[in-house]
Image 1: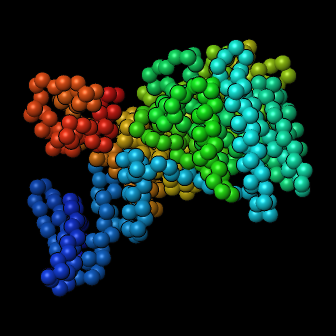
Image 2: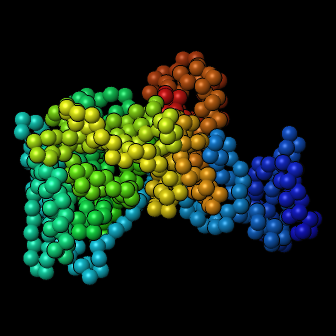
Image 3: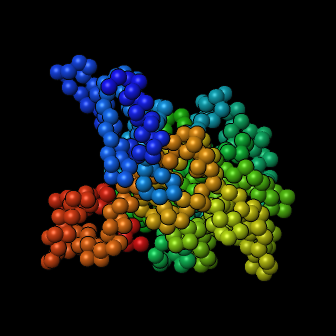
Length: 499
């Protein structure tokens, strides 16, 4: 079969609704040419196979890769212009799920070139501030004071000014004065650790976890230099005796990773093998890129990063400052602000609703004795914008679909704006969904077999299995277990069936 006929036949079969099921690249040094491309297609159980060693056919087939559907967990072979980008993204995703990839940079920022000499001084001050807070406690609690303070560093020529601001005392008008003051300096940076907790703080509820983070913000240029956060459950996996310093140790851990040489880095919160991971990339995007819409409060433009920098924790007044509801796929962060004698509670919320079914952001202010006031309403999250801002953030955004069934089935198919357009321009933008596609078939198989779920649960919890040898064999054949343990795919599917 010559080149033209091989390529023509492939295109003709695809036109007749044959679906590519497999591509194989084989090498045989005994033959000339030694490389052969094989494509297997199928329609209504009828199989067609095309093999060729011609250069152009081989090149075309080598560009074909399986890309998951947006609307379901099936996939199709799609021509990829840049196979190197495909393998690069694949390597990251595999590394995330196997745990071999320990960190993934979302964005890296540097201060202006002419002020680069100040970087070490900025990082030095940030480190000194964090260390100085280690043994300070909020009155009558074990909680570290660092979550209630903001460190502000101002540098002009050789003069340095460091100020400590208390979040629960600063007025909204004071923040505006600080921003105006920052314009007179060469460098104006602030450092803020934040603690976001459900209500009440000392209890854990299904789907709720504490989030701890650290943000470095450029006051003069109104931009986030770095933001890093994670859930308390994830900190407990890598830090011994979490809480012995009032959760200060979590903020210090984030600082150690944030500052590298002369840049400020923001990382994807890892690992991602918990359902509570789902909204974290949403907030990383909102607070690192910033939403390009003013949050006008009494004439003052409070952008989203500033909300996180200066908002006061609510844990001591028994109000929720963070909640993620997996069933509804809504999440919010709420912090306190003071103006005069009045305290208001500002809420940044990701939501889906009848009025705006796409995932969107709202900014609403709640008061003690008067109706709430919505400042930003239904600002739709656009996936194409996320990809353009940070490929790695987009990977994390979609990777949540592997462990979170509701995000997979409720949000992915039709409630993420821009994802279809992103796919049309570059199919690789949706490739992070391939893990969810791998989990789809065994997940559906298990949902119809309660006895298989029980066997899988026993293996996951290391309980003795009395009757289940046949099921164990089937679970092994589906690559859910190996040598009496859950595989990575098994861990994903087990997490899904528990929901």
